[in-house]
Length: 443
Image (tube, rainbow, N blue to C red):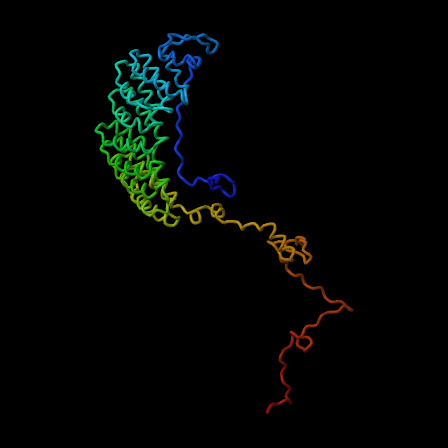
């Protein structure tokens, strides 16, 4: 049998994340209570009403179980016995007593995993039951089954999300939130319809789910964010704008387009969310640079301040200094002025002597292996001389300052004295021109 290929990091051997993360496998967790101690042989007769009561020991106590407890214990059956448990559950769902219907709704998710025929039809009916306790149990059952059976409860969930009852709508929204982890594509469809509702509360809650489905909802989520940013309700736009920083980390170009729209919104919080999105965008993106430069002259103080803080990330020192000088001519806020003055300060020019020296980079250290090779070849490394045999020469004393030469002592008899060339040729310093004799005449 061939094994599935797993891409691994060649250095660590750990699997590489080469695709989208898998959906969370949501399972129905069986609850535990005194009914788990009922003997298997007595569960079905008790659930069908063939016997009235059964006693058992649970946690060192004796419990007396009625028909509702027998219905609650149906969740333990599997295999061929699930058919009998399903038939008993169907009878319990239409029973006249409310506590038996509540017990049936509590065990419905456990039975539905094995056999779900007609169970969700009864769930839809019992959501409008006359008994309040049954309605609460039905809402709780919907919240538990929604992440596991999205298709079966899609219509029911859509109706309950819009219910006027606070208890019913809260349970439905809880199920929709859990559905984000298992089937985000289904949640996208629900958000799509909810954003068209006239009630702004529904649109706000729907926009709040955009961040949950952003990673795995696909390109459809981009359209939902775009619609939300154009919503007439300011709170919907604020909630949608908060998703832009997360979107910028995955789709920088799409996030830049949405950030540009958010930066011209009339609400300051929406504009700030657009600025935060630009902080996460790649600094090489040309459009992002243009938006930041444009934001430095915005009338909104917070937007202006946020854009000025982004300038050092986008431009080099020379360009940044020029831009800061130009902005200082029109800026009035003291905090922004202080930031701009820091950008115009050049340590190599305006700094102290110590600051200028700190900018000088030291020479890189010579690796030990290169030093050994050079010394072995008799070459000098650094400022320390090397002897021909390769050993370092002793340090030479520092040269003393030049001293005035002292006059040479007079030569004594028997002492050799060097003769200069002038003396050898007969020239002396006291040589003078002599007067010619009278007898000497030149013709």
